[in-house]
Amino acid sequence: MKNTKDTDYYRILILRTIGNFMILSSLFMIGKTFYQPVREELRYLYEQQTQKEYIVATNETEAKTIIQRDFGSHAAKGSLREVLERENVGLLIPADPNFSIVIPKIAANAPVIANVDAGDREDYLEALKKGVAQAQGSAFPGEGGHIYMFAHSTDYVWNVGSYNAVFYLLYKLETGDEVDIFYKGQRFVYKVTGKEIVNQDEVEYIIRKTDKEFLTLQTCWPPGTTLKRQMIFAERVVENK
Image (tube, rainbow, N blue to C red; front, top):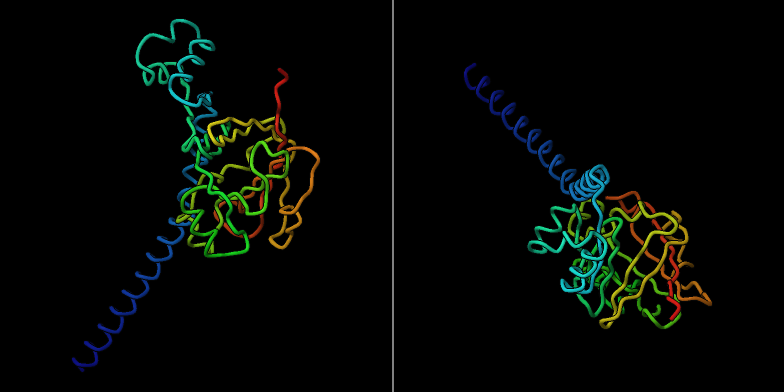
């Protein structure tokens, strides 16, 4: 009788251990998948409530000039960090002046990996660990063609957290919002003209033709999943000299 009770006890103990392990593993995978999207959402919400602004500058010297111009001479007092904190302003300097994308509304700032084969899974997954991918065959800033960039893509939903989070808030963009691309030390400014959610098999957006310099940004939708694609469309703004 004692052996039977011991056997039942250990069987129940093993089953409980396995059950607890599966529950904890599930919670871990859920947290790993959605931690970054949730963190970005909370940051964006907080900054909207506190009315935080972001300025885009090529370097700190240019940033100081912009701050003094926009916030008055009193902003010149103290270090750049102190001024930014006092004025509730964020500073976005391109991660790589040779090729970067900066989106002030959502505080996105990431290097761009050029000539990434969108049809080569191994190639684009490796690129997306480093930044935003510029699709091979699409144009470069200043060339007057269609520029196609994508980020936050993944092989499996539970692996989302392993990839760059720069486009998690892309859906927040609206018509008129600014997108800045730094390429070979030059700044190119684009304004959002529209957005759309499409299925994964709708690839015509990649080969889209245009008579203007046109920018398409792509990410997965909803954030933290791979179900559909969020597309943002923008046109270059050329200043009249």
